[in-house]
Image 1 (cartoon, rainbow, N blue to C red):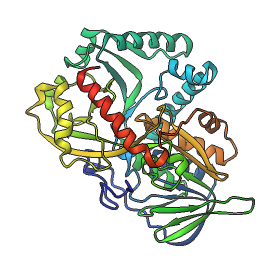
Image 2 (image 1 turned 30 degrees about the vertical axis):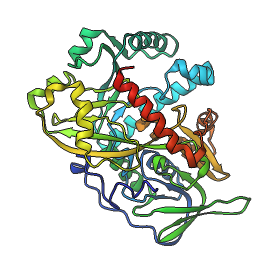
Image 3 (image 1 turned 180 degrees about the vertical axis):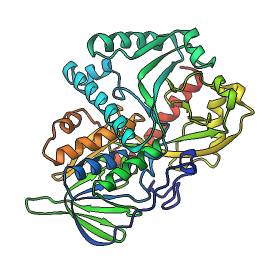
Image 4 (image 1 turned 60 degrees about the horizontal axis):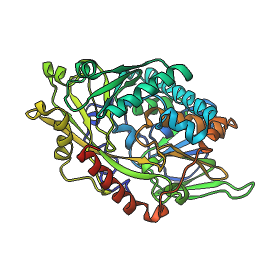
Length: 436
C-alpha cells in the first residue's frame, strides 16, 4: 500500500488547523519531460527542503520533487515541538555509541535547534520558548532529575528545570501527572508555516521545486561515468546525485532503508478558541508531551486553541472518526474540557526505527538517505537535510557520524515488519492503558 495516496487527496493539504490558516503559497509546476540537474531531492518536507536550500545556496543545480505539495507530509502536520537533544537521552546514547560520540550527537542536536530557529526567523515564523515533559511515575521523575544534573555537569546544558508535583500542576493544571520538567531551550511553532517559509527560501535560492511529481522509480548509477535517472509519472530527471528525503512515504523506492524505517500514523485535533479557559490547560505559552509509548502532546496556538495529539493506530488507514479517537486521551488529561468543541482533526504519517535513532544511509554510490526521526524530527530532519547537502559537497563528517550509528532492520525486513509492529504497538498501547 502506498501511503502517499492512502489517506489524502492528491495535491491537497489535510484538513488541519494549519492548512486552514496557512501562509498562502502558489503551486509549483509539475515535472514533465526529460530534464537534467546536478542533484535531485525527493520529498519536500523539512529534510528535502533543507537539503535543496543548502545545495542551491552553494551554487548547485537542484530539482526538488514532491508528490503532493511542499510540507504535505509530517513536516506540515506535526505538533510543532522543537525539542532538545536526540530521540534517545544522553545516558542511552553513551551506551549505544560511547561517550565521545554521545557528546558529538548532543552538539549536533543543538546545532539542529539553532538551524531551525534561524530558518524560522528567515521565514517570519515565530518560535515560542519552552517544552515541558510530563511524568506519570516517580521513577521517571527521578531519572529526569539525574539527566538534568548530567546534562548540566557533562554536556554544558543547564536550560532544564525540574518541577515537583505542585510546581508542575501550577504550569500544567492536570491531575494526570505527578511531576515534570521544563526545557527553556526548546520551543514550539507552526510547522506548516515553517515548511512553506523554507520552500520560499529554497525557491529564491534557485532550486527548481516540482509539485505533483510522484517519483516511482530510480535507476542508480553503478559505475564511474554513469548518471542516475529519477522517473516520475510525467517524465524523468538525469542527475549526478539523488537524496531520499521521504521519511514515512518512502514506499518501494529503496528496500534497504524500508527494512529499517517503519511508517506509523498519529492524530491531532484542535479546539475552538478557549478564551479565559486556556488557563485550565496551560498557564504559560509552552508545549507539553508525556511519557506514554503512544505519546500525548499539546500546546496552545496564538488564538488560544488547544492543539492536542494522541491516540494510536494499527492500520495504514486513518480511522473514520479522528475526533473521537483523540478526544479520549485529551479528556483523560483534561476532563473539564468535555464541553469544548473540536473544530479540526487530522492524521499524519511519521516514521520510526528499531532503536529510535534516525536512519542515515548510502543506498547507492551517489545516493544519500535520512529518515526515521521517531517523533523527534522537527529540528533533526532540518539538520539531516543540511548534512546530506554537505556530504554531496564533499563535507561528509556530520552525515558519516549519523550513518555510523547502528540501524537494525525490523524483524521480517521490509515485507513482514508491519504485522510484527502491529503486535508490538498493541502490547505497548495496552501497557499505557493499564498504567505501566
